Amino acid sequence: MRIELATAPGDPARPNEDWAATVLPAAGRGGVLVVLDGVTPPPGNGDCVHDVPWFTARLGGALTELSGSRRDIPLTEILAESIRRTADAHRDTCDLSHPRTPQATVVVARWDDEVVEHLVLSDSVLLLSSPDGVVRAVLDDRLDRVPRDVLVSDEVADAVARNREGGFFTAAADPAVAARAVTGRTPLRDVRGLAALSDGASRWVETFREGDWAGCLALLRKAGPQGLIDRVRELERADATGRTYLRRSKLHDDATAVYVEL
Image 1 (cartoon, rainbow, N blue to C red):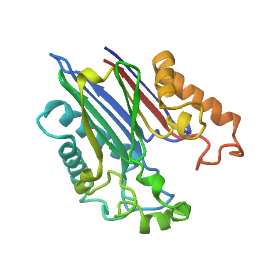
Image 2: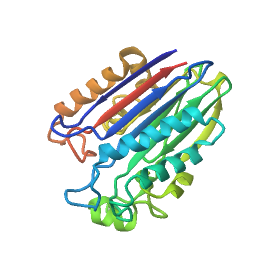
Image 3: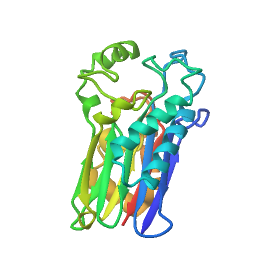
Image 4: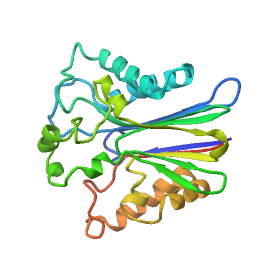
């Protein structure tokens, strides 16, 4: 088995708000991968004494522990319990009802001798490759379906689309959001490898159009997660003004990639 992970902050002067982990059991075959992409709040927005890296570390730790230790519990229930635990850790000090309470996108994959389970919430990406080379991207595309004019400002997005019916969903303080995640199960015999990407890393496909998802997985296999992130950074620097590739709210974003070859 091959497992590689890389992450890089979008700005060295700011903490990386992505979070990632992989877990292998002490005995037997199987494992877990978790990737979170923390949602950067506007300055001065929200009423929480904790920052986004605190939130992603708490949520990611709970997801990793429960996914690995409670294989009898579905991933949606594990996400719900992880959100509940994280909310309980700061509900006495923070306003968790604020639309910009700390939150994150979520990717979880878990495999054993028979099956690969997956869960995706919001705009991070999970790739599954089959033994014959076919690559399937598991996407939660609800954010892409929100009209651009709704996302023109944080205030409008919070009021109309964020964690609301007809909009898009992230893991914040409400465990019920777990039911909104994209989930599935694939027989292990049909999976050769997996990759999870935060949207800072998936820019290689979604922003810069360097290739399709199969090409992205091929690059991960050849150059590893750090190679993919390095290439994204090269592309970002080459279009620093955003004249060619307009779909970017910031020059560099936190970027995380995990690659697993079974």
